[in-house]
Amino acid sequence: MEVVHTIGRRKSAVARIYLSEGTGKITINKKDITEYFPSAILQYVVKQPLELLDAVEKYDIKVNIFGGGFTGQSQAIRLAVARALVKIDAEDKKNLKNHGFLTRDSRVVERKKPGQPKARRRFQFSKR
Image (cartoon, rainbow, N blue to C red; front, side, top):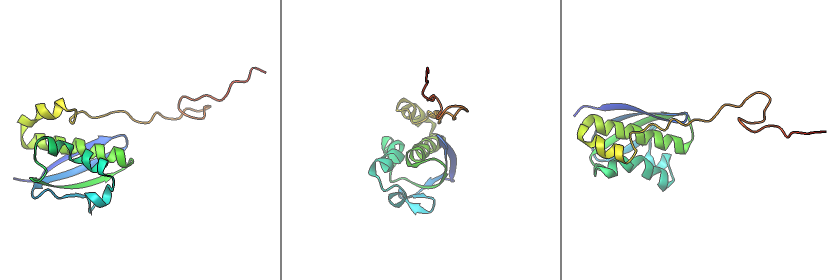
């Protein structure tokens, strides 16, 4: 099997992953997943598509990620992993889609408007 390359995005985080056959090692920005994401919840989010298809120990994943925070980064990696698994076996698409792993969450932070303290918050109105 050749190396499968896919991209996942969430908020301002962009994850490029390289998935190949292996023993289940996940490397993020040249660090092990437990070192990059100390939180067990974020590690779980990254591995969700693999656990759904019982493929945790089948593939090695190398990730380059930049932008965003930890949560956005973990969800961007999850999307990229799900897309890579579909590239390998198209029959997995229905199962991954039903669990929402193939949907790109397009919500991003709304920009701050001029004359206001935040995006929608207005300065306090004074009648007198």
